[in-house]
Every structure is written in structure tokens, then in C-alpha cells.
Length: 119
Image (cartoon, rainbow, N blue to C red; front, side, top):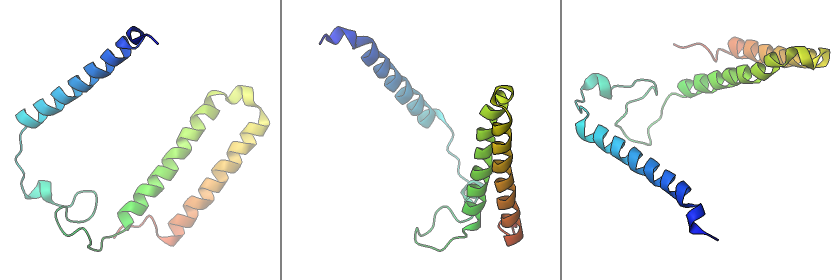
């Protein structure tokens, strides 16, 4: 095994690590650090950022985030189907219609249960 064959790969990894460390270090050293109450207030997580880790918190934020990911992923499944739609034929069309039908039923169920309501 010749080490010279791996030299470009090792050099690439080394340059990447050094470049990453330098940019993180420069950002940390030169970047402004001026915290104020608005920065330390609850933003998207729904609870105070600097409190006890064992406190009770509202689960609704995480529920909405999971639902967003679920419905966002269905779009990722539709892109390849749409790109190859003409070559797939009627079986693929009806398969996707069944998939979308199940998705719509799930969406209506969530809506009726109040999972999308925010108080």
C-alpha cells in the first residue's frame, strides 16, 4: 500500500479542517457579542432559554414542527414522480393519488383534532 496515493485525500481533509477552524475562530473573535433581553427571550422553542432543564414545557411547538416535516417530505416524494410522470403510466398516477388521498385524510384528522390550532 502506497501512502502517496492517499496524500491528496489527506491534504484535502487537512485543508478543510484548517479552513473550518480558522473561519470559526475568526467569527468568534471578531463577531459582536451583545446579548440583550430580546435575544435571550423565548423565540421558537416556546420556553425560556436559560432556566432549569427539568421544567415542564409546551409540546405544541414540537407537534407543529413534526407535522411540518411530515407534510414537507411528501413534496420530496412528489418531485421524482412529477419528473418521470410521462414514462410511468396510469399505475404510478393512481399510486400517487392514493398516497395524496391518505395524506389529505391525515391532514383533515389533524385539523379536526385541533393539532394545528395555536392559542
